[in-house]
Amino acid sequence: MTKSEPVVTERVSRQGRPIKHRSGSFLFIAFALTALVGYLVGTFNSQIMAAIGPVFGYKSHAATLDLSSLQTVYSNLAANFDGTLDPNVLIDGAKHGLVSAAGDTYTLYMNQKEANDFNNDLSGNIGAGIGAALELQNNAIVVQSVLPGNPAVKAGMQAGDIITAVNDQSTSGWTVDQVVSKVRGDAGTTVKVTIQRDGTIMNFNITRATINNPSVTSAVANGIGTITISRFDDQTGTLARAAAQDFKSKNVKAVILDLRNDGGGYLTAAQDVAGLWLDNQVVVTERSGGAVIDTLRTGSNVLLAGIPTVVLVNGSSASASEIVAGALQDYGAAKLVGEKTFGKGSVQKLIDLDGGAQLKVTIAKWYTPKGKNINKEGITPDVSATLTQADVDAGRDPQVIAAQKALGL
Figure 1 (cartoon, rainbow, N blue to C red):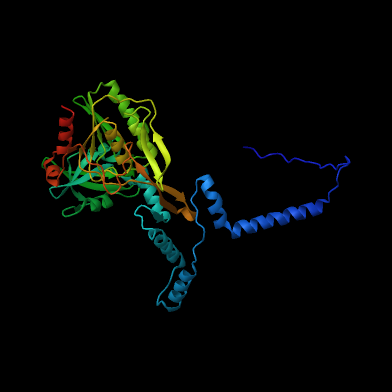
Figure 2 (figure 1 turned 60 degrees about the horizontal axis):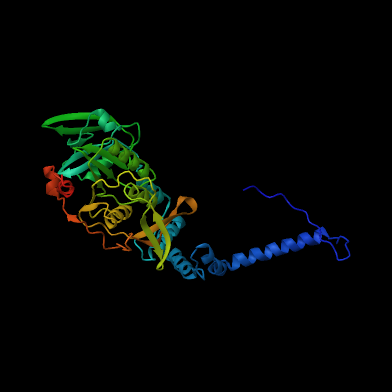
C-alpha cells in the first residue's frame, strides 16, 4: 500500500460562497485534538484494548500490574544487600519469575541467549562439530550414525565405531553429553577422535565445520521406505515430500514413519507431513476457552495414501509428532507402534521482545480430528513395543521389528 496523496477540500455556505478558514486556528485545534487522543490512549490503553481487543481476536486485560510492591522489595534489597547488584540481571530474573508464575510449563520468558538457543535447536543449528550422532552402549560411547556430507563421514568414521578418546583424553565413564561438549567447537579448528573398530584402534584428526543436520532422513530397504523425522522445522514438509516422491518412484510396498524422540516444532510442518497420507482432511483444531479458533486441513496432493504405513512413537514423541500420529491414527491411515507418547496438547506462540528476548506463550489447546486433547495423557499405540538399553547394547530394535510385523512383512 502506498501513502495517499493529500486531498484539499473546501466547504461551501448555504449562499454558495466559500467559507474562509484561519489556517493557524485550524492547525492549533488539530494539534490539540491529536494531543488529547494520544493522552487518552496512553492513559486508558488497557481499558481501550479490553473493549476493542476481542473484535480483532486479541485477549486483553482490564488493568495493568501494580509494581509498587516489587519496587519496595528492590529498594530494601539494594539498601541492605552486602554485595553488588546488577540491575539488568535483577530485571531479567523478574521477567522469568513473572512469566513462570503463570503456572504453565510451556509459557516461558527467554532472554536473548535462551531465545537464540531455542531457535537454534528448533532449526537444527547445532553449531560446529563433526556430524556424528552418538549413543551409550555397554557403557561405551558409540557412533550411532554419521550425517551425510559432514566432516566425520568425510574423515572415514562409521556407524558402530566406539569413541575411546577425544584429544587424547579417555572417554571411560563419560556421558554422551560430555563427549559432545569436547567434540564440538569453532568451525575450522581440529579435534582428535580416537575410535575402536573391530578391535583396531584408529585416530582421526577432523576439522570441525558448521553441521548440516536436516530434520528428515529416508531410506529404502527390502521394499520398505523409512522416513525419520527428528524435528518439525520450516524444511520438514519439503524434505518429507521429496522422500515420499522417491518412495513412489521405487514402488515401495510399505512405509515406516519414525517419530521416536521427536519433540515437535512448527504446527504447519505437521500439517504438511500428515498431508502425505490425508486428502483435504482436518489434521487438528485449536480451541481457546472452549471455542474453536482455528482448523488446519491438509492439501490435496497426497503421495502415500493407500500404502500400508506404521508410525513409530515413544515417550519422547511430543507436540507436532503427536499431531501427525493422532491424525493418521484417527483416520485409520496408519498403525501406531511403540510406546505411549509424551502428551503435549497445547499450542504456543513466539513473541519477539526488546533486546532479542522472546516470550513463548500458550495460546490454545489442540485436538485430534476425533476431538481428543491428549495433554498429559499421550497417545496409546495400536501395538505396544519397548526398546530397552539392553536392546541398544545388543544392536537390536524390537520396535522396528514390531512395525514390520504390523505391516505383515
